[in-house]
Amino acid sequence: MRDPASFPHVLAMHSAGGLPVDLILLAMIAGFLILRLRSILGRRTGFEGAPPAVARGAAPGPVIEGRAEPPAASTRPLPDPESALGHRLAEMRKIDRRFDPGQFLAGAEAAFRIIVEAFARGDRARLRPLLSDDTFAAFDRAMAAREAAGDTATAEIRVITEAAIESAELAGTRATITVRFLSEQINRVTGADGQVKPGTEALLDHADLWSFQRDLAGQDTAWHLAAAASA
Image 1 (cartoon, rainbow, N blue to C red):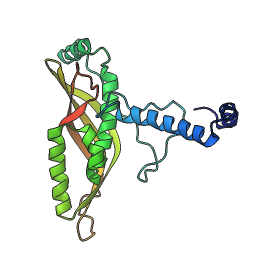
Image 2: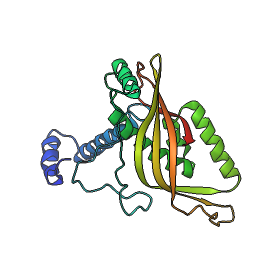
Image 3: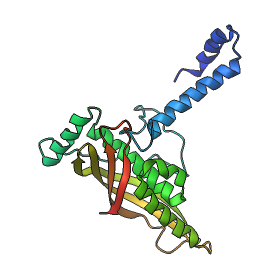
Image 4: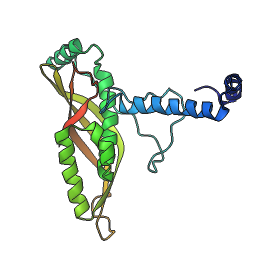
């Protein structure tokens, strides 16, 4: 981003043409926010491969939900290009030259964090663009049952130790990639009486298999969560 000290000079150049300075500043801020939203959510829905990039050495962004430190980086091993799985990913790339397994894994990991925490909050608006229709319906039923019982939940992913491609399938141009996530989480559940349910405050290891789908020949370049299960 431009050094704030240079803003007056830029604004002065444009305000000389008769445009109010405050409108120009608002336009600059709006443009920045639109670019940030596109990088996080993708051009349509789901995720499009990689999460927002952070420059090395840059200061971390704002702390969210009380975390004292940014999450640790995970390991994202890629399949051997000469393996059967590697060949299947290469077939996907032939259909969509923009497809990159490394960027896909980075985007899948970002989506994993968002979905786990949004599900705990019952944030349907946040979940809907990231899930397939059937998966969203299943998540919605689970959230509705929790709400009917008067329970509330919070989820905190302390660290994702690994995100790795477990399998890849191609049916015509529809791709399905299953990712194995290893993580440490605290999933706290509070009952209707306001008491935290025993055992839900412990830091636990989780192993999950999540399957993401996309039509590689379609206009929508976003991946959506199609299935989720414990490994």
